[in-house]
Image (cartoon, rainbow, N blue to C red; front, side):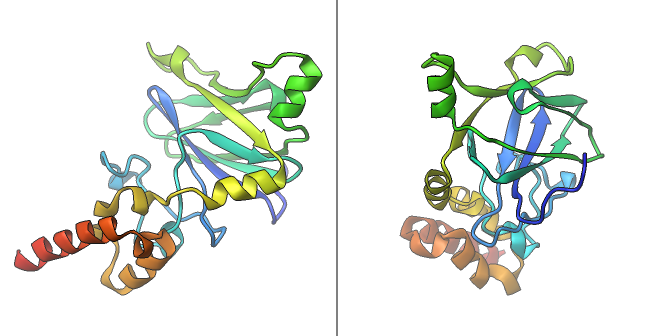
Length: 207
């Protein structure tokens, strides 16, 4: 596809057997880097927390998109070949292990507008996998909700960062970025999370 506009909303989609993982940039609007070697149970997308742009990234369980703004999907796969397919967005792009791909488009109607237009109150935009990827292939379906720009902005502001949801990930943040990480990730405002971090730091100091 052609190069995405510079003001595109970035959404990273990672396919794996047998689901999709999502990652959005936080308030800095810059998606951090990743390294497949960093993949683990608490970091399934292998996000690299030595990159300060990763510190406020968030990973929701459902995809939300804004109406009327260019959207760039950054697509990758963790294991085998998958394919991101959404007929309503005229989108089909392979997710290839070790070879990131991308696709951009603009959603012109919200989910609610489509429900009214189709007369189907159950209508949903959807992403599916169009590449046979194993026995659980059929389960790789993802609901996509398109919102008005102000609704999307509100939704985005309410999301917890990856680090805020998994405070143990702070141990992978370099010492020189820890203070910044507390601020960008939102942990600074979470007393319970700070207690967990202090416990991790105490254990690290005693080793």
